[in-house]
Amino acid sequence: MKVDVVLGLQWGDEGKGKIVDVLAKNYPVICRFQGGPNAGHSLQFSGKSFVLHSVPAGVFRKNTVNVIGNGVVLDPVIFQEECQAIAKMGVDPTKNIIISKRAHLILPTHRVMDAASEASLGKAKIGSTLKGITPTYTDKTARKGLRVGDVLAPDFKKRYDSLRQKHLETLKQFGFEYLKGKVKSQDAALEFDLKTMETEWMKAIDYLKKFRIVDGEYELNSMLATKKALAEGAQGTMLDVDFGAYPFVTSSSTICAGACTGLGVAPGKIGKVYGVFKAYCTRVGSGPFPTELSDAVGEEIRQKGHEFGATTGRPRRTGWLDLPALKFAIMVDGVTDLIMMKADVLDTFDTIKVAVGYKVNGKKTDRYPFDTAAVIEPVYKEFKGWKKDLTKCKSGAELPAAFKRYIAFIEKELGVKITYVSVGPDRSQTIKL
Ligand code: GDP
Ligand code: IMO
Ligand code: MG
Image (cartoon, rainbow, N blue to C red; front, side, top):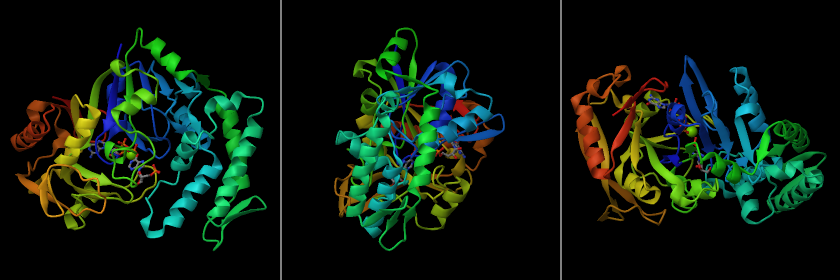
């Protein structure tokens, strides 16, 4: 059987968590394949809401196996907190989550290094979530990292100490010193109680050992003999390490191909590719954002869409829908089905704009530019707002005509059908077209 994939097509926070939770009722296996606790995936059902960071969004569905794949970077402390919160919802996470031995561990010093690196960049900072993502993936590709499977080795502590020592050396180059269990920057603007962080981390490693730590690629491929799986992307295509506006990206492969390398499934096993996008755009952190609105309209979208980070609480930058960027994402991901989220946020708008092309450094184009310093001016098409409360719509037939015209235009431009429209944060507010 196949692995279907859910991907964010923009700059993250498209609503992947909600849609995976909705689709999960049809999939016995749900997998995360990249990213780590930089992700914040919100779910809402039966009057309860929940934000997941490392755990796949199938965890609340009965009889699902939730796989944390080899491509993920795992912070045991955040994972433990998350699992304990899941347990309070009456689900035993040790029974329905399995973790690949090959997933890399985020160490306390990775988090300090993330902060040190961002501080050193000053105004040019990436706007990282400060969860240690980049230093952990750096160690992975530099072949120095510690993996989940290593926690079972008798010399794990020794290997931990050795890597931590290397990190403290690197931190010295950033002007940080380690003294009496604390790591401090020269100007003392940043200080970390490393000793306490490490005690917590080691306790969380013991907790991690309660889970089934497996050869994820073997487990998944053998489950695929009889079961279909859904892979849940984190971040978004425009934050991909290769195809995002580098260096304003995350450090993993957020595109469809990342599901193959991050789980150990062959390209031929990929089935449907669900591309999730908001009816507008948001971005957290630095980097180009062609359709960004720094005016009252942008603020209205932020307030109505509650556009504040699920992981960091930072206000998200907001802007109009960007079709050239979406076309780019659909091309690199091979999207077969589109899912539009949060159109209800635009319910009260008189006019809704959509970027249909760009002028890059004054020249008309429909291509997303390589150069992050390029001046991108969007070319807009305007639509009359539908001025109806979409959150109450239960079926395609109830959707207003002006909204249908808007989505028909988007489908035609993108050349892919929109198969679901989400009209509110709750599991029930999802319309299959
Ligand atoms: P993810 O990272 O892609 O899972 O998305 P986030 O959870 O970070 O951000 C999406 C936010 O939008 C969350 O607060 C969701 O509860 C909310 N949301 C999801 N779908 C809809 C929708 O269709 N309408 C509205 N108004 N909110 C939604
Ligand atoms: P989900 O899965 C939105 C952004 C950060 C920063 C850049 C690099 O919830 O959609 P990192 O911590 O990865 O080194 O930060 O990427 N970023 C996200 N933005 N949603 C996310 O995840 C993100 N994960 C990282 O804001 O700009
Ligand atoms: Mg999010």
